[in-house]
Length: 153
Image (cartoon, rainbow, N blue to C red; front, side, top):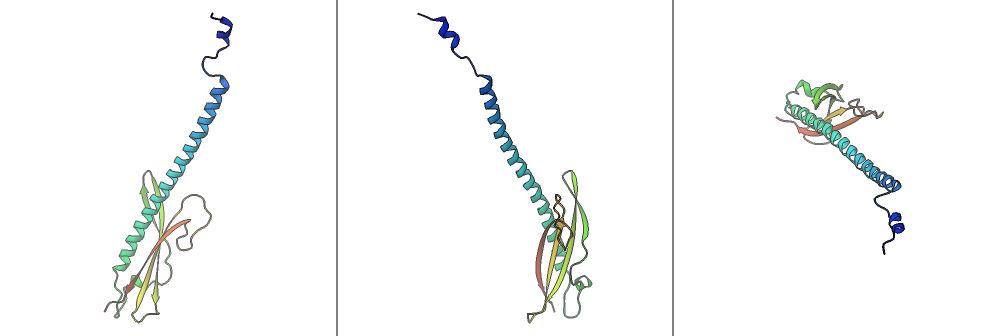
């Protein structure tokens, strides 16, 4: 026969402790996912800054390569030896303005039979509160490009 006493001791649903443990496990998983998402967003932001800096460096390098370096005389812009003072440039990115610093250096390569110049372009920007500053741009993040140009007749 059917016993009413055994029926009353059976559980229906979850206990409060089981629900709390399930919520705790869910919270730990969600915190891990949120940390991963924040790291991905930070990396994407840093890559965006670096992409703009590389574009600025390429533009400056192409402009410097277009100047004349010949036996008869050198374009006055190429008469700069050593790092120039950083020139600040503001770039609008999304809803913020980022200030980049661009500095160039021109050096003679004297160890070859053909006169050549090495042109270096450094572009820096500040991101975060890192205390290390690069000497060329005075910023805590920097990317640089270089090229060598040969004297034309």
